[in-house]
Amino acid sequence: MARSLKKGAYIDKNLLKKMPKINPDETLKAGQEIKTWARASQISPEMVGYAFAVHNGREFIRVVVSEDMVGHRLGEFSPTRKFTRHGGKMQREIEAKKKQEENK
Image (cartoon, rainbow, N blue to C red; front, side):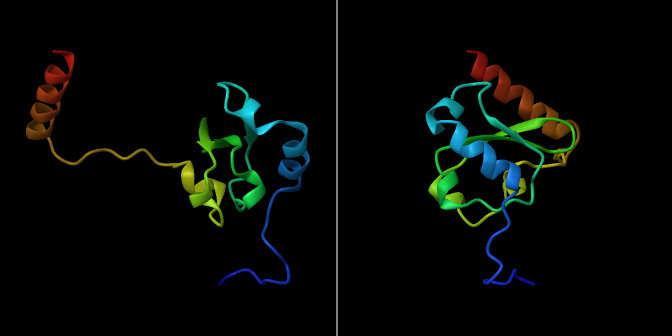
């Protein structure tokens, strides 16, 4: 069920406090992202251009916000589960060939 329009989008209050203090261009540098655990915060148009370090339960994943992301949640861009490929010996052989081609 969608959130009521009269309530507005949920954005963590700590994120709203941190954003005006930091220039968006500074966040694009490595290590200067805004760290957050607020995966449920919705991305607003004011966040475009900022870089966030979103916690996925184990580490912080760097997320640079673009206009296409507006309306989505920060957690959508920080996966919590590692995808393990399907396949066995055949898949490993294919991957080994790709690595050899890249190294050439």
